[in-house]
Image (cartoon, rainbow, N blue to C red; front, side):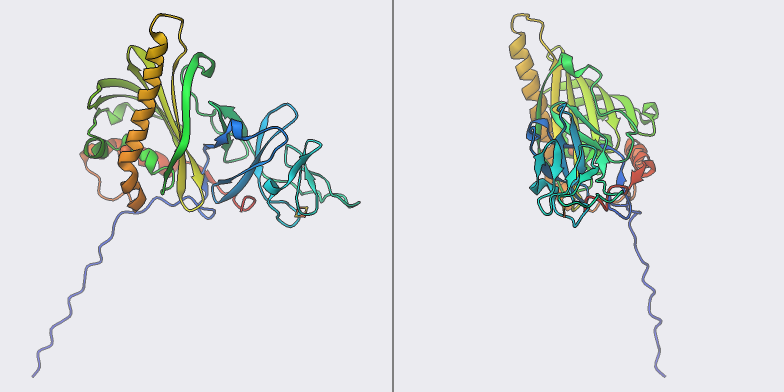
Length: 335
Ligand code: FES
Ligand SMILES: [Fe+2]
């Protein structure tokens, strides 16, 4: 008689639940997103750029105020960034329908009245630190990201060129990820997760960073939405502020701004050199952090899987991200 061995039932192994990707189906986080440099939006020109799952246009109205709107014409879908500004309106390149700065179609090129619902999606728009920002929603849920010192009192430098191949909330989990700060950046971080103030659309806390070559920095941290983090430190005896914020792009990519700022000088001798050094150092440090993470960010398949005691801060951030409001309100209009 043949003996039949029972096949072993393989145990199915699984990683933790992913946080839903940003997409038209799942929605995009209701954040302020940097869209472009203010200087890229010239009067009487239409600037077109990728955003979330599609494309937007940015224009200036007669008062110079910037407006971010969906890029596709409500007639047959021409890309309005191929059009022209005519008489203060966006004129579509295809059949010359015209849209005002609120996105309402005000005229066709024939005798027909524009259809009543011929409107583009108009994002709440703001300008700060030399960038145009758009809020993903109909009404902003919080103020555009800002430092605790007003912009007018600051000298600052900006960059907008670091691209990561992950949805924005993943690179922005880095500042709460203490194990990675030690392993990747050689930074020791002291922070008490219980002391973190968490609000529906922002976080606030204090931490001490021990940075090789710089030493211990006491920092105040502000997180806005799920795509922006600000560190305020004392460096060379002056406050140095760093802000990084990510623009959501098609294909789960994120383009990051970096803004480094310090209070304007008061004319003291040697101050200009100090300001210059503080700004260069702030920018260099931000770039270094992104560079050190780059390969990991490229290949990461992010899950909240098995966390340990040192991940309590990260766990709080990821809970905040999971609870964060999303919307798809603009997704069909921009694609
Ligand atoms: S597609 Fe724009 S006017 Fe026809
Ligand atoms: Fe990092």
